[in-house]
Amino acid sequence: MSEKNFEAQIRREGKKAEESGHVDYLVETGKLEKKMKDEDIDIVENQEGQEVIMCPVCHSVGLHWERCLKNQENLGAEVAIQLIDIGGAVTVAENLEKFRGLDKRDALLLRHEILSRRIPGRRPDSLLDLSQKMTDFFGLDDNKPKKVRYSLEDHLESEEYKKYLSMLEVEIKLGLEQRRRNIKELIDQEKLSDRQKISLEKAQDFCETVSGRFAKEFGEILVQYSRERKEISNEMKKFLLDKKFDLPQFTVANGEKASELLRDLGFSSSGDLNDQALLLVFQLPRPLSFFWWKGGATFLGFSCCRYRR
Image 1 (tube, rainbow, N blue to C red):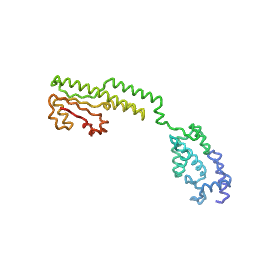
Image 2: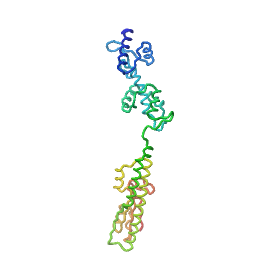
Image 3: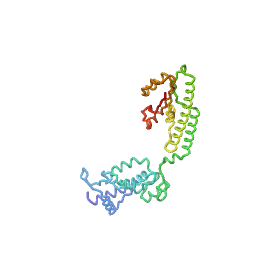
Image 4: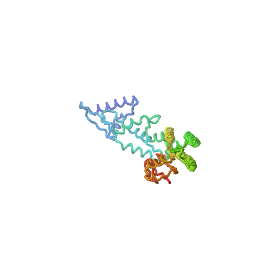
């Protein structure tokens, strides 16, 4: 193809593209040649032996190379907006550098991934226009980027979340008033002496008091966790309450049942337990017993128990 015919084809294709509104081509010969030289545009031969332009962006053959370059530039602007750090530590310039470090093909693929998140309005034509667009759209100060996403701090300060915390506190208070307990009694009532009955009442009062305090502290932990971290779902609260993970496990036993319980707990000296003894076993809720370190507990928390003859 002669140089004259090549220039004529460039003009025709550029005019068509300009009229269709896709891109403003530089159709003047001098500007076009300079642009092609600056962008390192390659001219190759196709299968028919004709000279064609190789797009430096998508590496395909055609006269769309300038449109690809403009799309790539605009993509950098879009990526800069998408990558703005929440705390404002990453600047637009730094994000543009991240984009420029991408492979050209990867950049085009990334473009398709963020099209659904494109900012409203027309496409930025320059970095100056991009700066103004960001100021208008995100309400940014000159050098103080505003938080773009709905952060954890915003969520914790919202009125809706404060209502959730109030409801959680009310639910915990109602649970304490219902006097939920996790006490198992293995007592042979017929063999209880008067002294044992008094000891049993004291043991029951002790279990009631400790369970109430434990549930209160556990409830405050839930509220504090929700206040500082995140919301605890209703499903999680229901699971904790149904499994009684907010309460310690107490077991009160006497006689042969007490001896059997001690053997189950791994105490071989249970044969020395007399008939008047009353055994009280305290176990942490299973989630807490996993992390019980002071008594060297097993995964069931059994090592925390003590008994007296």
